[in-house]
Figure (tube, rainbow, N blue to C red):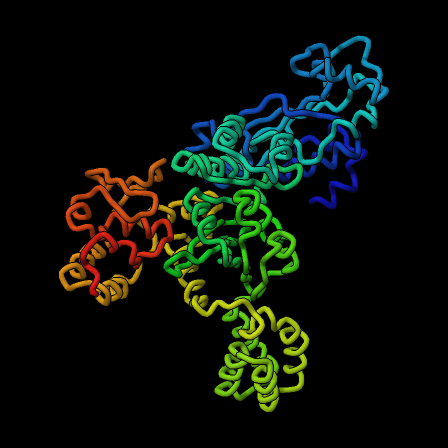
Length: 552
């Protein structure tokens, strides 16, 4: 249909426009922008009846149809429809702009009667132009048109003013900003209202969360959401040495989820930031890294290594944003990429290639690396070896042990795998942006945080404690499995509510007000739960210094 539009836009009159049919409000707005540009005429949405406010429509039409059509009826009027009214036309601003535009104000101040009227069709599946009057009682000025016209403005204003989204785009927003945006919303267009409600819910539960919104230019369509809860920010401040940035998944056809991870005191991967990005958006790493530093300025000079997913580009930005950091590539992903490429290029000795690739990655000396690469050449085609030398040999300092930042204390493969499992569990297929935000923020609740291996921690305490104390500690660790604790930081330390009572702990998380700790001076479930949430080590000899539990 659009090709037909362009052929007759400039000469179209009432007869041509009348009875034109559009199967969505967006389709009409795209046509109308082109039509206005050809004729250099300005219209605005004067009167309308939202379809979701019509009881008959809500009860009888599919939700997708209501969302697509948006209005039961809509009347567009010429910008000069009521030029004598300062309230509707903003005459004071118009007068102020006369010197800029060099446009004379109409002397008769008569309203222009040009209009276009759309109504839902009899089949209730489209919008039809039922009436229109395209003759204006004033001259059309191209200069005035170029000054006032904004492409996409009519579509944007069906939910939020585009001037508002352009202004706040790429900026951090707070709880009051979200409430203000919600108050502006007229419809649920493009899911924006649901997205704002999910962020409003986040701020309701976590007033100190950090959120940055990015909208498509001149459209009320979300492009990117960057968010950090207060607990995530605290973890990043405490454990900034090594960060991991990776694409986690595509949660629907339009959006992808990226995340920053850190490794806490228990060597567990913990989320530092979530980034929901419309597919095809460039410079994701730069945006995410800059936003992280803007949220938590302290980390800028504390990060020593940033480990990236194999498909993350623009690696050079890391040095700009984290001056003291080296760049690594997730080794497990490098090995998987090389192994798959070897198969593509005809390498058949699979049982020999994988061990060789692993040996290359774990080389402890340059000689060992070079020799293993030569050995690999005995089984691989020249094509594959050329690919390896050009693509991966040149970046060996990012994934081979001898040259890279030491991550020997971390099982990065398991960390990334568990992180992905955690985020995908419970997230429905083809989730919307609001649903994804609600899911991600719910994962930060203490009751859903990843628990440690109780047996392993209990064994560590058994190795240094007398049997009676070790048994009591093991029992307290067991209560972490089903415990649901509300933990908050206070000026003097931490408070914990288990649904019945409140308990208080010091800043160092060594003492607790509960009877178990007071009577035995041994670590209790409250200290363990709070340390676990904060990423502090659960096995810590400081927890035993005041007791007589340590074996001499």
